[in-house]
Length: 358
Length: 222
Image (tube, rainbow over all chains, first blue to last red; front, side, top):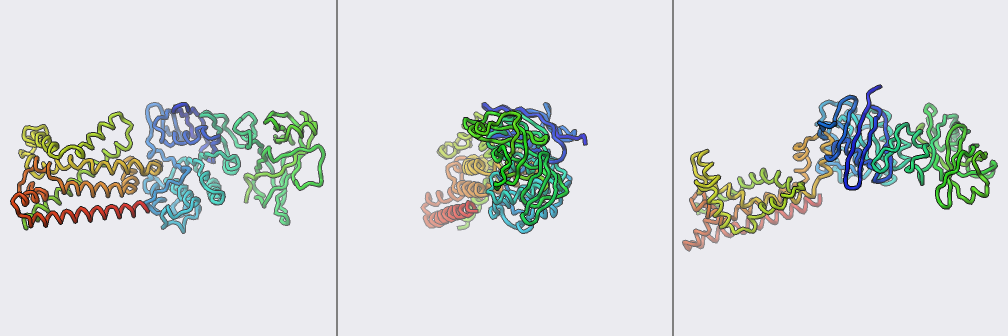
């Protein structure tokens, strides 16, 4: 597959400036990650043609939409947009909201109306007005409406951020399902690492209107030179393979490079497993303690120690070829005499499991 | 009484035609006013609002000159159709459009400022062109603004007197609208018909305003 989505946009607005160039694959979900004010939403609006002050280039699979001499109007781009807020048309019921884009599409590629209603479970909502929908329901309708306009690229701007926890867990599986079923590429803005980890294949990291990193999700998430991935979100991503499921305790045993791990729930034995371990959830000990509630312990060697805050440090570990990091206090560092080259036991309090979920 | 009815019917026609034209002219003008960042905006706003503060006789005087056979618009009309604009129904329609313009444009501009900006963007990403998105999203969401514009432009045109007197005079069936009819009746001391027509207009104005406020409240709750 040589066809790609290439863009390069720049925009000046007051003291903010955006200048981002990237080339994306024609399928899968690319996460756009960064702190607020990084230019994530502005980049999406440029791609959708909603920023009249933007200058730049956009080509989807060789079809040039924007360049120096020509700009395609928003309605001719066939780029779907799911905004942070659902933006449904309040004067139309759910069915007519869904049909709005479909009626205006020249071709009907992708999903049919019935399929979309089925995947997003909208059947019982079709006759309702948007004001009678919950936040999660409304956002599902908005996703369906964007898909039915037969887009060749879908932009999603933090579609679950405005939702409460319950609605969030309601919407995310639908986006995962879309990912599995659709060949439409998706650009997904998020400022949550866990959300990104769960949904995305690739990651584009922005800060201050500039591209900091772009590439395979695991590669980018384990990089240590990205300031936006430090702090609370610092951590690492490990690959693992399924070994067996223990029904008694509802745990899956998996093999990672540094040793075996026990993961919550039953995982899909046929798919590779990707897990994320936050530096805050890793503690270190010199000997293997047996009287602890912590299940996952990996033998690791200390590579380096980075300053973190007045009271804590980030310890970079190497664990069977994979990188892992632990955030411990300066006091523990001194008491345990941890230094580069030391052999330690990394105790992992909790993990978030990415793919391989059933 | 039949003269009263003729005048009433004439006024109703004039108000209906004027209102329809004002919606056509007022919609793009109000949309421009609601969205522009142009430095000419205050100037255009002032011109639109002039008929509210100007004495109708002054407005009527300038319109008489402009629409007259030697005026800029009037002479053009004569060369086009062979007929004059002053003291005709067509001339009254043009004069009424100017006179009632702010009553259509201002409610529309204020509703356009507050409604549907986000939904409009969503419509564009769903493949709707500028005009399509405006008609299918902004117009329905601005329903209460349109209702106010229709009611105010219609009622205001129905009650006009000074401008009509200057531009149209008092030709029965052509330019003698209801307000002129009432004036003529009072002049000739025919208080009976003056009472009847006045009471009719009073009741109409009251009913139409109550209806507007009630419907607007319903629309706002939706």
